[in-house]
Amino acid sequence: MTEFRSGSSDPSQSAIGFLRSTSLTSLVQEEILRMILSGELDAGAQVKEFAIADRLGVGRSSVREAFRALEEAGLVRLEKNRGVFVRQIGDDEAEEMYSVRAGLDELAGRLLAPRITQAEIDELRRMVEELEGCLAPESFAIYFPLNLRFHDRIVEMAGNRKLLAMYRRLINEMHLLRRRSLLRGGGLLVSNDEHRAIVAALASRDADAAATAMRDHVRAGRDRMLASNPASPRSAA
Amino acid sequence: MTEFRSGSSDPSQSAIGFLRSTSLTSLVQEEILRMILSGELDAGAQVKEFAIADRLGVGRSSVREAFRALEEAGLVRLEKNRGVFVRQIGDDEAEEMYSVRAGLDELAGRLLAPRITQAEIDELRRMVEELEGCLAPESFAIYFPLNLRFHDRIVEMAGNRKLLAMYRRLINEMHLLRRRSLLRGGGLLVSNDEHRAIVAALASRDADAAATAMRDHVRAGRDRMLASNPASPRSAA
DNA sequence: TCCAGCTAAATTGTTGACAATCTGCAATCT
DNA sequence: AGATTGCAGATTGTCAACAATTTAGCTGGA
Image (cartoon, rainbow over all chains, first blue to last red; front, side):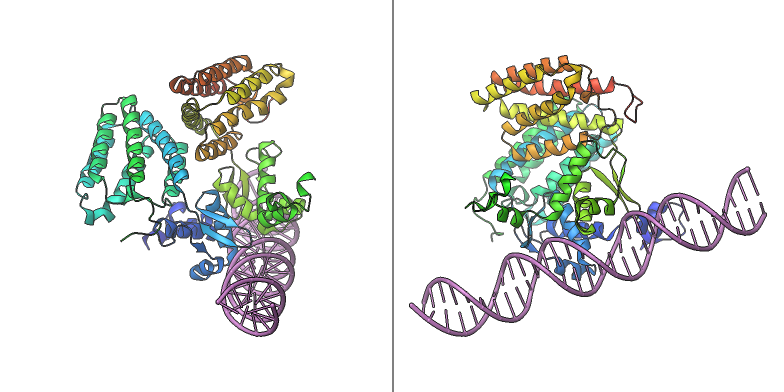
């Protein structure tokens, strides 16, 4: 409840400021997004207006507006008179996404290398250390979000908000990949070696080297995905 | 009216298919988008729900849903209880956009060069010829959309739908730049020389050369923008 | 058994109404 | 005069109701 303390002079952190700036639709949108990213809503699943509205205690209007925003973000598909469905991303579109993501990551590395600070280098090195401690298959549930955070932080450090927004949108969409072996166990050690290479290239402040390291890492991730079981639409045992 | 002919066996091209697939909200969204891109709605202008709804003869819900989609697309800003405003893009964000666009165009050139067909090369050459005929200041109204089409076509030819979607979204947003000298008269001849260089690099099927030509063209466009009159928030005489 | 057609329930599309908030202007006070 | 308060109009936020469409189950017949 600490975020609702009153009497603060900063309206952006008070309950008043919260009410002034936050609409029901935004909250619904965030909640549906959370359900999709967490896997609570599977790719391809139908999302019913009334079910969401009833669950969250809001009217259908707010849910419908949230649907429109999520469609524009590429996370759901709206079929008129039929309903809203969590998008599925096939292998061909997945390839395209990896290609674009390689381009964005390459750009992030190129932008960040000349401007990275020592504190930022230390922060990334600590994250790689943390990742190293989560390589066991049973700690994969920790490795996965930490890995996302590592890459997100690099793009954030690049200092280009437009790039960061595009990157995050793409990463959100890539959660819907049917076979996401990059999220599974295979090849994690290799992946962390590549992380080390990325940080080393950034620390050397060599833009070309950093760009190459970032691009190669994404391409390796793509290869790991393609090498995974081709036909496993559901979470295999 | 040709698109509404009935009796066709293909529902996607018939009036029935149109009604089945198109919602009021989509039409409203397209109309507002058109108004923004055409300049009918200036950057920073307020867009009132009822005015749009009344003008298009629909209820406010459809307009509100369209607003949510347009906000996600980065074209409008929603302030709770205050209204919807066409976004303004300042010089700092413009720089970031040019940087990202350079990355996307570079990727498009790199992807297209190895796979471009002779027919596509001819098509691009014809477009450069057309552009050459519109360099006079008075025919700028023709040059501008043709220039957009030229670049859009290149990204389309690259064959990556995700890249194309991101590129188009970014271009839409860049229409909201306050000083868009790339859209004004200055430096058009130089610009078309660069177009020729792009097509030549693509025709040589040299990925690196094509990527460089694309990136340099965007950077030159950025420089032309920065060289324009810094302080002209309204359309100067 | 299988299929066509029908009915009822569920779901979505759209509109209108009411409540809450903001804006602009006039009246009032210091 | 300048600032503040209060009020009416306009605008937005949210919800509930109605219409249209789809979906599912059922019945009847070949």
